[in-house]
Length: 167
Length: 167
Image 1 (cartoon, rainbow over the protein chains, first blue to last red):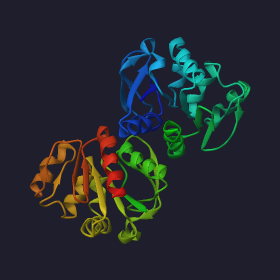
Image 2 (image 1 turned 90 degrees about the horizontal axis):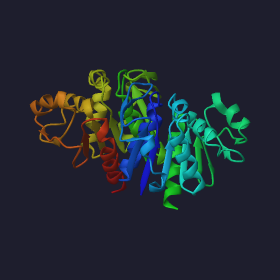
Image 3 (image 1 turned 180 degrees about the horizontal axis):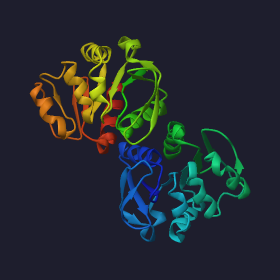
Image 4 (image 1 turned 180 degrees about the vertical axis):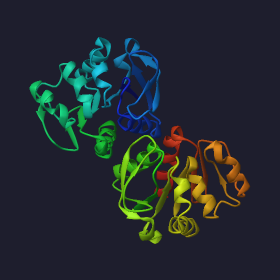
């Protein structure tokens, strides 16, 4: 089993670090991809090493995609490779988990129409405008799409990710 | 099952937040105690609500004690109630898990003599001087004491905590 995190500078530190460490705890391999390979900095100052550039991501290799929030998604969503990988993984039935502003990448990938999902409240109107059914709940599971709102939702978000990975 | 985190301003954010969320993911109740009840601030700026003051901690209520690192332990170790609770839990066979500078609280509690443990390298000589057998490894399990060195050890640290809780 293998997981991918798509991120960029300004990521919400706990929303990247919690799944990153949590997957390692389960001994699941995790790749972190960013605009370029190398260190990226979270909004709270944590540094995480991206071992891949977006251009080198092979979406078929992964079972799970995690999209953390913060300011990173506004960079991630501008990259065609990152957006294509997100679309590809969702459309091929891989598990996709987005928290907070991570939903902005789903909007740019054009995959949110008709889906039930949640996100950070500051961008909920964008989610609705893109055709999603927005729900204000700590975690929303719609088939292979798992979404949450804020760092405090991480326990429920993670619980549902591992439940889905076991199925 | 119930867990206790002893912390103070300046805590290493990920070392508090990871176990805090991880325990909630398993639906284990977690109390956070600090010098006074109320918000405490991590060195990276995260705010966590302490729902208990050290003076109100009843160590017999808990199955697990977590001691995060950062600058918090230098405050925690000065409080007699916090130090007494740590000693009490370790001596009564409860699970005690300390990461990074969290080991400073173990030293002040006078419980590290003759134990095998690890900690942040900047304080390893204090651990040795207090009579511990210091080992440079991501996680060290010595009976009911689990110790780790740095945030990057959190996956291994957490794996051993949940393994021990299941036993």
